[in-house]
Image 1 (tube, rainbow, N blue to C red):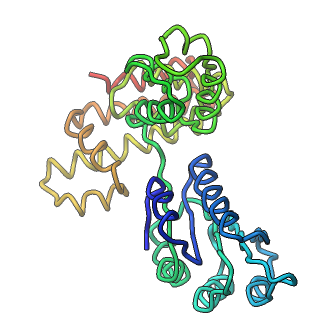
Image 2 (image 1 turned 120 degrees about the vertical axis):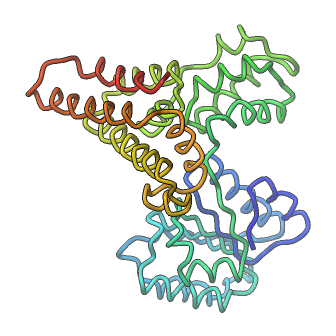
Amino acid sequence: MRLKPEQLTQHLQKQSAPLYTIFGHEPLLIIEASDCIRSHARQQGYTEREIFTIDHRFNWVDLLSAGNNMSLFGDRKIMDIRIPSGKPGREGGKAIETYCQNLPSDTITLINLPKLDRQSQSTKWFKALEDFGVVIPVYAVERAQLPAWVGQRLSMQQQKADSETLQFFADKVEGNLLAAHQEIKKLALLYPDGYLSFEQVKDAVLNVARYDVFKLSDAMVTANVVRYNRILNGLQGEGSPPPLILATLAEQIRQLIIIRKGLDGGMAPAQLMKEARLWGDRQKTMTAAAKRIDLKSLMQGLLHAAKIDRVIKGVAKGDIWEELLQLGLRFSK
């Protein structure tokens, strides 16, 4: 059974499952979902708690033994299992299957996993988690969704702001939900319930954006010049290595070339996406960009990337950051 994070509270009000698995790569949302389950369990009398952090040295027999051992005082128990790598291995996979097939009584098991690809979600051990319990996938809050997310969080503390202010807030906390959460809580301490003005938010919210090269490439392919410039400046200020930035941008350009050639050649969309190694919402974004940018411009962009590579290696003259800026601006028209 699968649940969205926003469905969890309503689910717990009706019933408790013996097994919950949370996976994804948004730390704040994973923490909140896990806390919600643990809090509910404590209210239901699950007072004892055992924590297992799985690494390559972990003895899976210990987990199976802990599940079979009754509490000395007869207390209900929470089994808190964390697998940071998301890869339990062959032995661990079999142990998880066995554990799921023999879930301990008077126990709620909570498993935390990182973001998992399709292959990992197709394994027998993950299917066992899904068949015998509740699986909660936690997806990233996309850039376009962030202002609405901030607005929803403000409404939970009886505050609100207009769209311009929410957009400003989103720009300041881009990619960092933990920081956004902290800033939203700070607004509750600084100001009373009700409407927040732009000036109030501007004075209170810090620039806590977490810039990364993937958001930079997203700004490039969507022709968002202002965002591209802001993220690039942020990456420069954080000391991000230019070779990593260039490699990411160049890979995006190569994917756009594959898509553009495929579109021009009448290739089937499914085959085209597979060749370009694109999945999910990224397919729509990249296809729109490939339709907008002609093949000649894309090839010139790839040549520009090669020039920047020579500048980085010191065999050609130029300002690396200025060249990276101009590379992104090539696709803005």
